Length: 118
Image 1 (cartoon, one colour):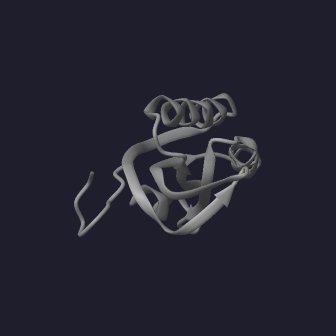
Image 2: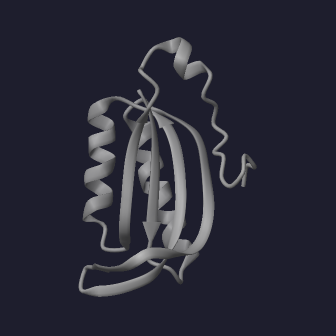
Image 3: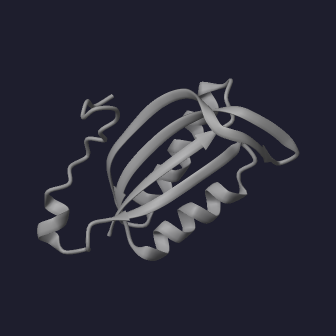
């Protein structure tokens, strides 16, 4: 299955973002998945103040990853990210209907803002 993961990490340390992305990527690759693309969107304001792990956040460091993996692998990635205290929020979305013809049309490019790749 093809998934898209949008994650928001506490701002301030790019090394934390890279480490979390590396951990998620390693889980996917170890379980036989493929990473199609990853983008760093940088620090953006959150839609509303968010409390997580006894801290309040108004900004977050956004990044996105598109990957192919099994359902169990995707669950493991979500569980791992959910336990990481550096994570503010994340969401995983299954793309396409799972057929090869629909998935082949979706590449690794992650479009952001008016059709431009960032």
